Image (cartoon, rainbow, N blue to C red; front, side, top):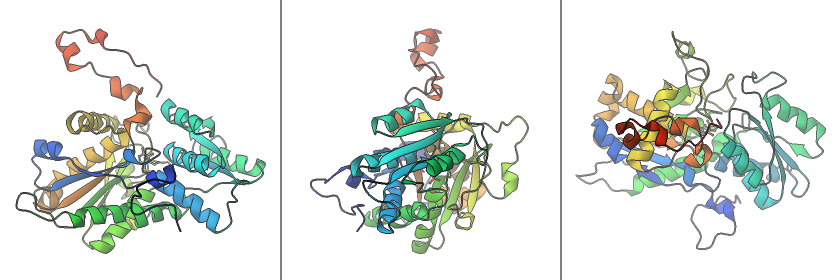
Length: 369
Ligand code: PMP
């Protein structure tokens, strides 16, 4: 049986049963400001034990590999290339289960992630951000070399491992369906009783693919909105990925976007793609924090920004945004803990300081991005 516990026990045996079971929160203040008629809901993954949407896949990949004998407790070494959150999930599972854990991660990813990994006992290797995925310098190539030279090393490989989307198919999606179906519709709060639109950023694509498949089984009319940063190549049609005048291929949002298509990303499961740009992503992230009190990370802002853009488009408004009772769920993948000293959080004067024309009084948190 999986350690993933469907019902919260009165006393937890370990941090592993604190993985998942994340809250679904109404973004009513933002929905009101935008004049939306639909229900705008957020799955807030920062509440999971390791602080992100990737905890569930870490636990599932480890437990599936233990079941089929690829991982041997007390002997095997976990090695994984990651943008950080899968690494934190794996390091957490490794800490509780007693595995050694080695993580490779591009330099771009925040200092907070590497500090969290270190605290969990992981060994970390940083690689150049600009390295193409298949170049010898990339975090993926380095992880493969470490596996070759380390006795007992196993790469669970989130890019190709079906346990990645399966974790969202079996757990995250089921949590969502239980939540939306258990809240009765009232005249003040109409509800379709199902998920009508799912919005998720794509890194490996595991979240988007796993959720879309399961939610579509419950609602064949599901609209699945994938969010991909400008500069990445995951969106379809591919013409969306061509840079327009003035656009850069470099994006600061962490965790989404790639320069190759991971095998676990099922394009078939996604009905719409939206490209996200850093300025709107970070502005929307700050808005989520200030308006809704949700302490989330940059890719959450990207997904909510994209959701609002689509819901207010002609198609989005007519099908969903202007329709009472439609349930739109946006996945907010991680929390501010990962970015507390990042410049995007601190690149504008506070309103009080701006009013006094004295932005200099604002505390400088420094740049570690
Ligand atoms: N946002 C953040 C902050 C992430 O760390 C990730 C995982 N890389 C994602 C979004 C995307 O998740 P997935 O890999 O399931 O596509």
